[in-house]
Image (tube, helix red, strand yellow):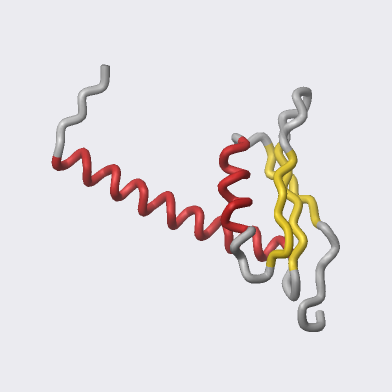
Length: 95
């Protein structure tokens, strides 16, 4: 592709995941330097499938989604480590 050439909109089905995960991926995607647009299609009540639509430049949208998923995984790992360290220093009462 030539420089700054937009790809066709690509809708990628993410399956029956919780929409909050798709929205987190969208949040990361819109900050990606090669993404012009990222939007989440809410699940249809009968089918329950979540999709994400991506328009990118210079790279295929799937590559941008993989980059976003890897960043999301890293962020979740960091969050897990922070929460785990809280459990070692303080007792948390859950009632």
